[in-house]
Length: 217
Image (cartoon, one colour):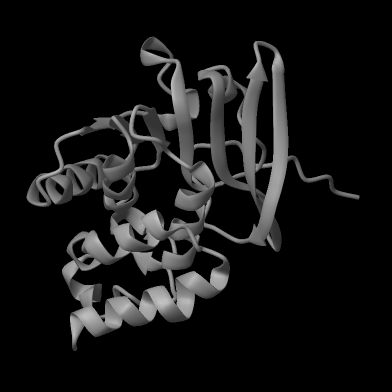
């Protein structure tokens, strides 16, 4: 496989047509080596338009969704980012190139170790991987400029919104199958949160977040 050609095809055939047009995001996707964050057994599929299996029944998001969430977060160089769900560490690697610092929380020990090792091999030094339950965020180190959910939730967690700085934003996929929506929430005042639904999509559920109540008749 010609890896660079496959990377180019991923960007031009999957990501750019999905309205990812920010040149900084596109150049970052060309630079950060996704294949180095994919389990060895699936390396040949690193650039495919599909979720890829990770340990403990988890998965990497499809590349176009990773790219679109990154674009919508619009991280700036001076900002502090909290990621919920480290996975393989790939999204944290992308965020690290845009942010001042990134903390990524992963509750599954095997994934926390995998993410930390992948980031170490990639020589990324401004990411801290914590083995922790992301449901509660990281109040002791808040506020954050950006909180990014690398997976879906049934509803926007209020406990995370309270950890945003004024002007900060949370980006993630919200809802239940078959209809989920990528959502951005801006903290515009101390007690005001402005929500924008960005696009329809589907993503694997983050572990530990409450499921919506289902009524039975």
